[in-house]
Image (cartoon, rainbow, N blue to C red; front, side, top):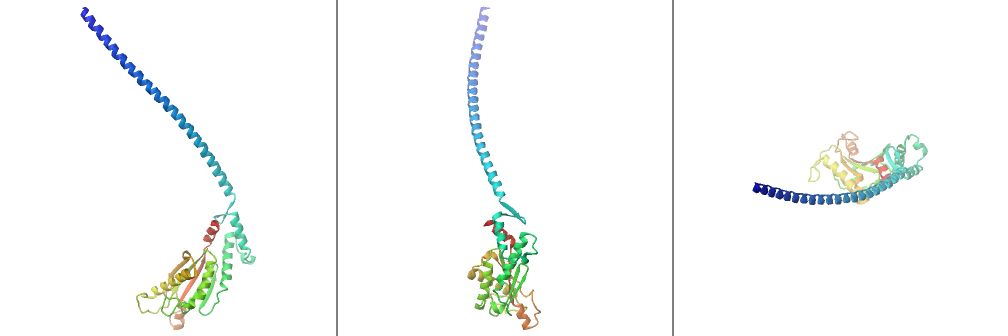
Length: 274
């Protein structure tokens, strides 16, 4: 009986010892977790303080940007859907002073007025180009069309520009270079006569395109017209001025047409960039 009691007592003592060790270990783990939690809370508070400071700076910057935007917007106006500054609008009105009031009588908007002003200035510029049997100038609204006979620009059957063309091409370049908002399209036109095919010129399509390209390159390389303002087009013999039934009529059809196209939207964009 005593022996059984001693064994039981020993078992209880050993069990108590094991439980105490686990308890101490758990207490230690708990202490470490609390320490880690405290450290995390401190770091969280530090991060929140930094974020708050950053947010204050962001709000300050946004406030300044908003103020600057409002100040800038107050100086802008919309002219026919294009936003420009009051100063640019003033510049436009100043440019209109050189145009006779009667010329602007039909304008309903500022954009209409600028179109008419461009038209007026183009007509003034065209006065330097004298019309004759080889040169015809026609102005329709704001589009200027200058038709030049092939004998004025090229040698017979060739796309190489002759020296006789220098004077007229210089005057045209002067007009285009005076205004960045002008585009210029060069159209080559031929008669319907079959060509002797060569390596360079196979038919009237080739000849009309090569002649237009030659004029474009001449304007760019010799007279400093910006290439982005130039367009080259070949029409062959499909837009004749007269029936191709006589030498006289065929001569009329062999021509280069130079079309000067005011781009009012580009004009407004250029004004906005100044």
